[in-house]
Image (cartoon, rainbow, N blue to C red):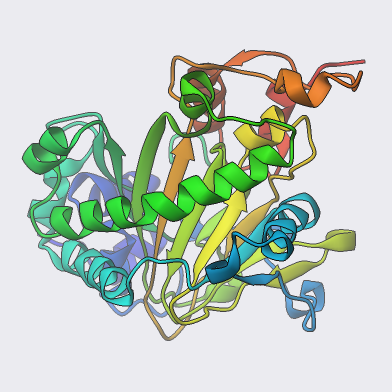
Amino acid sequence: MAPTTAVLINGSSDAITDFVLKQGNGVKGLSEMGLKNLPKQYIQPLEEIISDAKIMPQASIPVIDMSKLDGPTVAEAVCRAAERWGFFQIINHGVPIDVLEDVKESTHRFFRLPAEEKRKYLKELSPSNNVRFGTSFSPEAEKALEWKDYLSLFYVSEDEASALWPSVCKDQVLDYMRRSEIVIRRLLDVLVKNLKVTEIDETKESLLMGSRRINLNYYPICPNPELTVGIGRHSDVSTLTVLLQDDVGGLYVRGDDDYWIHVPPVNGSLVINVGDALQIMSNGRYKSVEHCVMTDGSKNRISIPIFINPRPSDKISPFHEVLASGEKAAYKEVLYSDYVKHFFRKAHDGKKTIDFAKIRI
């Protein structure tokens, strides 16, 4: 029997965990109960909330037209954005609009499934570690939960994806991943050439894009958006992240002097951000920047990030081409799987993950 609204708002963490996670309802299930007040487990410390006073209203990250990437001006703009902001949006990127719309619709289709269907992909029940439905970020490590459900899909092969990914979304997700690969390669080519890396050989290709993960994120309507977050402050552990967002908005990027910049939805665009792996490989020239997601009190929101990563077995460190001129390494060599485990075993905590690889002076 479903618990009452009062039980969920005032009840124990066990009641929330059972309803949201173990039964597969997610926070979407909480939202659809018509809660007037946020359950206490989701109330974040005040410093995690971005108030209007902390937002830079006139600031924006660059929007770059990829149709002229072969020219020097656009290539320079990409590298400058990666150095200065760590974030930029791209338009005319070559991924058809209908592919973007199809993968967004398939995301809604997955989250419309009954709870008993979604729970088949919970960590304890999923047919594979590479397919996982969950909620928040790392509930067992968090003092306050995040207002988000997700389906996380680690790409191994077309055959595995066809066999194990949910049928309501796998074709559209795979098509989107295939169609976005060209622009991802073009961006990485431009970024590494700026680091004096003249060729992406097999070893460098593995380091830059040896593995891929895609998340389907769902942020349901929140009764008290001023009290919680969709995703807490963090930087990604990827090489690059390619984000498709809908028209609701809510993504914020840390700017100067502890202020935050909203990344408004631009129709047909993709948001690109530098991850920690590329910050390490570039020896800090490219910046992985803190970002977070705020919730909405009137609209459901989805976002679909593709995380382009090294392989788990790769060791990452600054490229020798970057250090060839005598520049001192700021980061030590780390096994990428160790770095990722460090990220996931704790709650979101801003930029602290990168300290795992920093060389102490």
